[in-house]
Image (cartoon, rainbow over all chains, first blue to last red; front, side, top):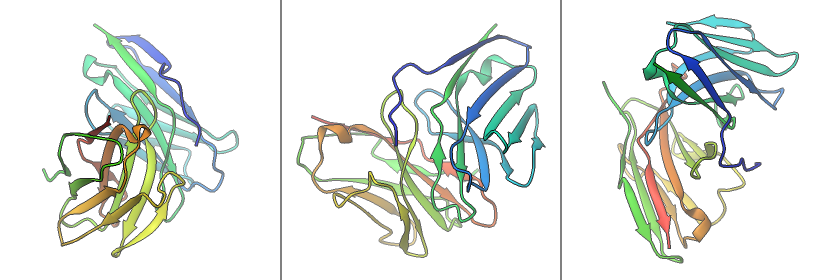
Length: 112
Length: 113
């Protein structure tokens, strides 16, 4: 796969605002899409997922939107909190879950 | 809450040496994965393992890499002859199968000198 430079795109938001993090995926055959949160020094942590037969799914304070036409995935975080500061990765996988492709990540910086 | 554990947290080795990274997945999980993450970059899939065999491997997972589930609890990644470019964080993950959420371990930082 391609290597990504050391500088992640950064989204800075004020505490309490809503955040939208975007991701473009590449594989039309992907069946399942996931958002992960990675805090410094830790492994990725599952946030929310969506299957390819859906276009929207809501969780607690988070919503994932899937647009298969343009291969675009977004994560919306409502009322962003300082604890949401982390790097967010999207990932895609085919129906058999044998291989997960991760996106390049977005750093979310929440200002108090 | 059950969690994936990995040992060691940090491994320093010389180029050409063999290393074994160890993982204990969540006990009732059936699918196991290894990933690596070079500092500041995205997470890269290495290999998936199900039913005591490799399901899929990436182009990174060449003949220098191997995985094993030697008993009912451990899942290991072996690098036979480490190279400088193998320096990275290595994450193990497991998934139940009935639910499709992957749980990641805290990672092993491998430094090859």
